[in-house]
Amino acid sequence: MNQLADRPKWNWDVVWEHLPAIWGGMVVIIQATLAGITIAMILGLFLALGRRSERRWISWPFAAFIDFIRSTPLLIQLFFVFFALPEMGIVLGARTSLILGLGVHYATYASEAYRAGIDAVDKGQWEAATALNLGTGTTWQKVVLPQAIPKVIPALGNFLVAMIKDAPLGSSIGVAGVLFVARSIGSQTFFYVETMTMAGILFLVVSVPAALFVQFLERKYGYEAA
Amino acid sequence: MPDLILSPSNYARLMEGLVVTMQVLIGSVILGSLLSLFFGIGRLSQRAWVRRASSVYVEFARGASAIILLFWMFFALPILFGIRGWSPMVAGILALGVNMGAYGAEIVRGAVNSVAKGQTEAAIALNLSNTQRLRHVVLPQAVPVILPPYGNLAIEVMKGTALVSLITLSDLAFEVQKLRVNSVVIADSATTPMLYLNVLAIYFVLAFLIDRVFKLAERRVAAKFGVKPPRRKRAGRPTAGVGVTG
Image (cartoon, rainbow over all chains, first blue to last red; front, top):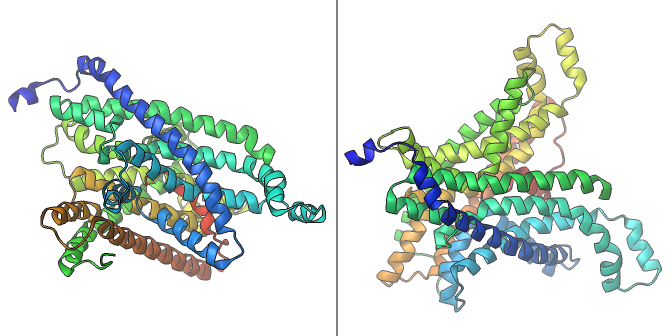
């Protein structure tokens, strides 16, 4: 105990020794985020289309699903994927569970952005498509979505940044992300101050530039498209 | 298909967890609101250093994720400042409140900015002090603009409270993890999927109630000031404070 109390409050050697391992954890977080946003972008569009359906028996379950996922904690959703799905015969690894959890959670957010983007397409475009006798599929593919998606991109960028911040939740189901690595080094060496602070700083090093980059994209393309 | 309903003793445990969840939620929303107001107005200060300090706080607290903030405050902060007997409850409220404050400050700033400029000019012409102008003229008009996104932010914070289970607080998320382990060990009737679905449903009801409380507040504020509440769409939620934490 005394030994711990006498230790200097900040030890640079610890920082240099464990920096590569903690950065490795950060890389895991970035990979999970990139995979997660891919799912969110695809599934989100699908959810948005289902939500917009004119048939109530289709649109209602979609709306309920979106609302339910969006209003409940991602952490419990991750627990569900990792601990409960295996009992239903679906066994996924920790990393896959994290990617799936992030992807589905943010797909519900993305679906609202897609919906807004689709609603923003001028009504005349639909009418013109009808006048030209285009089929439903062609109207969506060639007329509506090409105009809607550019408007949604800034919002998707914001979700990417938000997802980076949620990805460390994976440590709760054993994904060796930045938090998991920092914590396990901390518990072995008791250098919690150094490891946790490093985790925080490395995190900011990634998340703040990502946020600034998205803001920049938003300014550059957001208004032009709108 | 196993029963959707858990045993009464299981619900009793979950309710104990819900009490802790509510404590963390109320504590963080109070702290977060104070910080939102303070730094939201700080970002509009006439003094450059106040503006700059406020932006540093906002950028930093938004950039750091709630979970990283939480772990740092739980593990590193007490060692760094030599605090003995650091309470996980305080760490949790501090982390979630600081995180919420950064998002809330942006909402407050936007709302204050949206108040017509003539109102400020009129207040100056009437020789009101800065504080009077803020308290009696600007803020009351900003409140109807603040409330809708603020309700969404409160729901995001509610979702974030589940994280405190990771720093040993026995909230709802913690209790469900304990029940899961127990049901495996003592072969309880509750299956894991049903356990989690029940807990998700409890969180969902909580989110619904928060939404209702804020909608009620919006109506009352609108009635009091004779302003029409801005048309609120649930679709507005993503911009409010997504990533406060899931």
